[in-house]
Length: 298
Image (cartoon, rainbow, N blue to C red; front, side):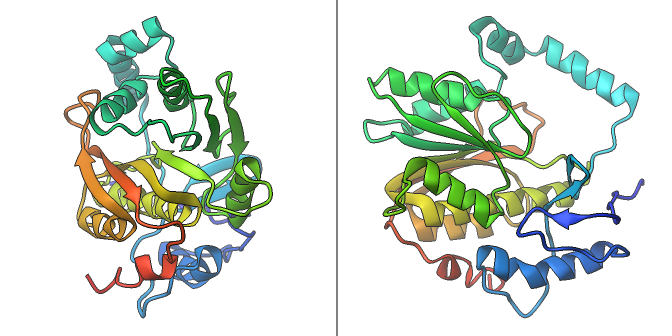
């Protein structure tokens, strides 16, 4: 089995410019990230280093994940062929959506009513190519609401008309500050009504690694929701199923009154992706330390 690639030279974590040793192997990288993590997102550090970690690294002007999926030319051709023959892909093109992911959010909203009369300030994490923002704009318009939607992604992407875009990393305090400044320049409140995340790391083909990478991204989304989502606000986020999904659900239940897992019909049957839908945040201010304090005890 081909080993995962860890780029070791000229690396800098996209969070506060913490630098890794140039000769660091995977275990050293995880130890290093476990040390700097509390200074980045204020999660209490347990006695043991993190057993998993997904962070984005910058090499020159290229942003790439720690976990890299190796694709052969043959597998890439199969993927393209599957996309071309996919009913939701064809439908998205016919209806003007930027990707088939639009139908996942449409189904989730039809079931859980994420968009209501109070849904005005929305952040779309893992924004590119913008299909979820297209759905959010349409759903709000149908309720005669003019929303403020900010898409956030590591890669640059042109937002649909009626929305805005921020290129940034959700693990960065700077990105959190820029989100606050967009919605509430004076910083007097938790500004968000809805947090949406369709983020996923590049898959490695190794189930546990892909699951752990997904869990780390979800933790980042939850931290942002703890800080910036207002009381009674909602959250929807993608995750890959695996051994830590129950741990994530426990954390969500500390923050929200109702938490559900769902797999929209638009997800491919063989895919391990599912979505957490978390409704009605319990209070404006939620302590990140309290939410994550029992993580290693469960």
